[in-house]
Length: 192
Image 1: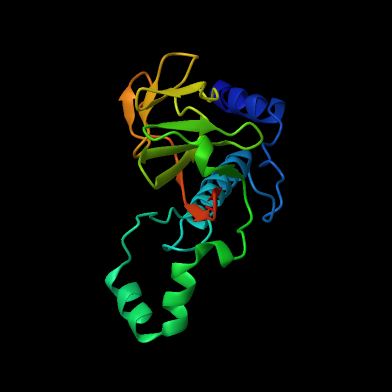
Image 2 (image 1 turned 180 degrees about the horizontal axis):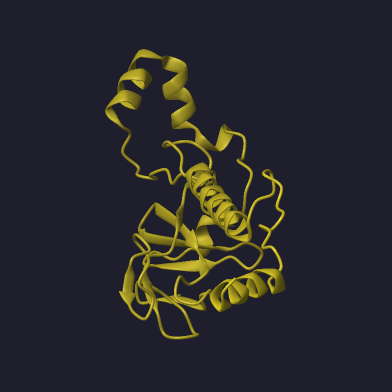
């Protein structure tokens, strides 16, 4: 036996046998757990986002509030006497649920910020009512006033159009969320 054999034998004997880490096949690694959690969070957010989107007329979707009926509504109203009778007398309709304000309290070219609800109701032109979220899209402050054709946020000076909620003055970059309105008698209801 020469010296090199002796060295190799002692090195092998001194080193313990390496064993692979015992991990059951079904136990996920930390990386797998974090990746799965991220996928679940992203897909859950996508599901909630899609649930908030809906076809026109469904809850959560803005519905236009123009005074002119659509062509489909015109043809059905012409063919049905009861349909034209109900549209001629809107005060006989049952009041929708949701926050409301008296039409007389909403000035033409201005608006009213509802105290007990998260909405601002505007009247850009006579008889046309719009509703928007009263929460500024810049940093989440409630808007403070409606004057001069704009909805004003007192926190950082953002201004929004009373007609469509679009940004008129930054720093906000996104418009106020619009909600549907329904006029019944002398009240404007926020219905969407």
